[in-house]
Every structure is written in C-alpha cells, then in structure tokens.
Amino acid sequence: MTVMNENQAVDTARPNHQQKQRIVIAGDGIAAWMAAAALSKAVPATDYSIIVAGSRENTKDEAPSAVEPFGLSDSTLPWQYSFPASLELDNDDIVSATGGSFSYGIAMSGWAKHGESYLHPFGSIGASLGPVSFQHLAMRLRKEGLPIRFANYSMAALAAQAGKFARPGSDPHSVLSTCRHGLHIDLEALVKIFRALAESAGVSYFPGPIHRIETNEPGNIHAIEVAGGRRIEGDLFVDCTGIESCLMGQLPDSGWEDWSAWLPCDHLVSTTIDSSQSPPPFSHAMAHDAGWIRELPLPGKTVLEGLHNANIIDEREAVKRLLQSCDGQKPTNVHSGPVRFGRRKQAWLNNCISLGTSAALIDPVAISNLQLLRSGINRLLTLLPAGPDATAVRTEFNRQTAMQLDNARDFAILHYKLNGRTGEPFWDICRSMQMPESLAYKLRLYESNGLIAMYDEEPLEDGSWLNLYDEHGIRPDRYSPIADGFRPEDLLKHLQRVRDVMMETLKTMPTHAEYLLRLKSRSQK
Image (cartoon, rainbow, N blue to C red; front, side, top):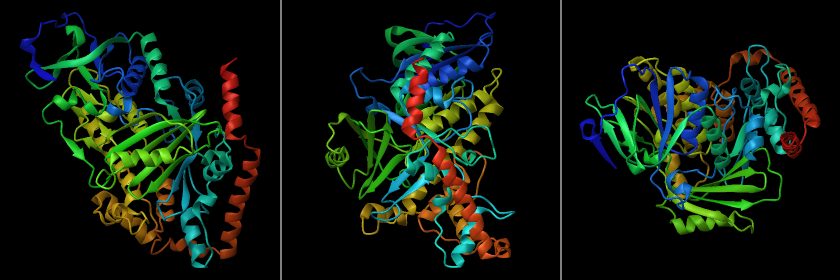
C-alpha cells in the first residue's frame, strides 16, 4: 500500500453547501459492521453520512483467522446495556439470532496447579455483613482454621457448574441479581446481523482492497482509494481493518506498544468440531506446558483455539495438541498464524480512529477482543465530535482507551504471573517476569490488607480480581480489623444463609439447554 498526497488525486472536494460530516469506516469484518450499525442508529442522518469501504487485503479463499485472530467465534464478558448501547438488541436477541450460548464464567484448568481446576465466575461473590465485605469475613474465618473457598459463595459459579441459566431480572433483592453473564457468539452470523442493520439505516458499502490513502498537510487522511480506482473522501476515518491496520498503520507516529514481554504466547491455531452435547454455560481455558487451549461451546459445535509460544513448540506440534482436544471428532477449518499482543499508543490520531484489533489485541485468557471492540464503539458514540475541532474529545478518547486496555492487559498478565506450573520453562519464565508497575501496585495492595484496587475504565468487576488472587494462593497479610468484632459462630451463620439462598434459587432455575430451547422456540413463532 502507498500513501499519496492530495495533489496527486482527482479533486472531488464536497461543495460548500454540504455540511454533513462524512464518516468513512474502513474494513469489512465484525468491527466495521458493528461500528457502522451503532453509528447509523445513534447519529442523526441530517448531520452525518456513514460509508463502509474497503477490506483487509486477503483473497476470498484465505482463512479469516490468517488476517483476523479469533475470527471464528468469540466470547464477551457481562455488560449492562445492549450490544452496543445504540442498538435495540438485548442478549436474548443476539444469542437467538447467532445460534450462540450464554456464559456464567470461565473454567480454568492447570493454571493455579497441575491437574487442578477452578471457575472464574462473572458477578459478585458472597455478601457483606454490615460494613465488612465478604472477603474479610472469609479471611476472619480462615484465621479460625475453617476452609473457605470464595467461589462456593458465587451464584454464577454454582449455576455454571450445575448447567443452569436464567437472566437476572429486575429485582435487585433477588440473589440472581448477583449473577452476570457473557455470551459465546459465532462471529460470521454476528457480522450478518450488523451489516443488515447498517444497510437498512442507509449505510453505503464500497468493497475491495484498500490500495492507497491520501493525506493532507496537517497529516489528516483526506481520502482512500479502493479497488477499481474508486476514491472515497471523508472527514473522520475509522480503521476497522484488523491487525493489518490499513489506515492507522500508514500514518506517522501511529506507534504500537508491544506486550509480548508480559503476554508471551505469539501464535494461534484454531479449529471447529461438531458437538451433539448441549453447551455448558461457561468456556474452558486449559493450560499446557507451552501455552493454553480455549474451548468456546456453541449449540452444535465447539470452537477450539490454541495459543502457544513458538520458541517452546512449533506450529506442527501446536496443531497436534489442538487436535488431541477434539475427542475423536473430525475438525474443520484448521487455521494457524502469528499474533502480536499490544495496543496503539494513540487509538485516535489526527482524524483517524482505530477500533477492534486495529487498536489492540489482547490474550483472550480472561477478556475477549470482542468485548474491547464493543467498549471502543460505545466510547466513540459518547465522544463523537460535533465539528471539525476534535482536540478535546480526541484526548479524552485516547485517555480512556489506554486506561481500559492497560487494566485489561494487567488482568490477563496476572494469570501468567501467578501460575503454579513449576518445572516447565515457559511457565517458570512467566512467574519470574517483571510486571508493569500498575499491576505490581494492585498485587501489593491486595497482599498487604486484602483491598482490590479499582480504577476508572475497569473492564472487570472487583469479584474477578478477588477470585483470581484467591484461587492462585494469594493470602493477604491482614484483613479488616472490623471483622474481629463478629463472633465466628455469627459469621458462619451469615455464610450459611448466603449459601442456602443460593442453593434454593438454583433448584428453581432452568437448565442452560432449556433456556436456549425456549429462545429457539420463541424465535420460530
């Protein structure tokens, strides 16, 4: 691809009477069409025109994961609003339309110790007693020699292990309100939904690889040229071309912050197998000596993705290990390729905004790239400039984006740093790594007195950090002294009440399979 100055192109500047801001979204995948659908529903058509143009530079028969990691399916963490907020779609709609499933958490096998598993649940854990939060009550009882496992007091964890599922409803006093849920989604089906929404709202589409971008003197993009010589001008350009980053990657000063020192997997292999089993309401992350394998269960199939370090095992061995996870099922669409975890130093540079994996790529051990895309789109909707001067909103967009991505990065790093797989070179190196100072501070704070550091733009709730610390054996030096004001027998009664309410609720919940069947029946009416 080449960059051309505007005096090298045919001048098709808009007439003076045309006041609409022209938003050009580059790309043809999930990021492009989700952004197009969200913008077309959120902004007035009298003020903005929205165009989707170009595609990643791949042929039609090339594997999607060869250019866009995690391109077969993805998961989300819980979010409060729709997907994104401007679209009138709730989670039931998304799951029903894509043939997806729900998730109450992630089963983690072999991370804390060889041969041991735990569940990373979504939602809150336990219940406070007066001014004392649950973890300090549990730590107080541990002082008395009582074994307390935090996840045993998580409604989401109990339901996931029992194969049950229900939406929380609107009653804040119900124990179901402590549950949060994510989604497992077929991305190809999701693209079709958002493309249909965008085109029905009047979004134009001009396909073909992006051959050139045209910049003006301040460094702004003025136009892009796609196949056939079609030249498309715009005021704001949104780069949704994936890891190729066809727009942002061509601009000076669009640096990339490399996270490979902390997130050491650098290659991906993926495949899909048929499954006759009803999908469980959780995904599965299985560690092995050179990386890990993720199972994403969907109705009728399971997507397997393996991440590994190429210095430990080669691609052939990685594919072999992935196929060993197929349980005798014949795999389809086996793909492989390198990945590079990190983020743009500036997600919004001049008049170009990166979304999706053009902006950042994160190890999906705990936070999905689809989740970060959704957040980026909602952030753009909030900070979309009303005129040509975008200095203030651009600065704030970059601040919020960098903070959220760094918080997400830190949580992913912690899984590697706290691993218990001793005697394996890959994991031994991970334990000895020097953490980013932001993460080192969070860990020190919890180790000192059991406090969870939560900041603006946190993609996870405090229960996620709490459970990860605890399952990996991090025990604070002290707990809140207020907990000593309760008698141990009163604390035990409190924990038992919490557990009893959860177990009674569990009895009334439908199975995940029953819930999915109801959605399917409703959609067919």
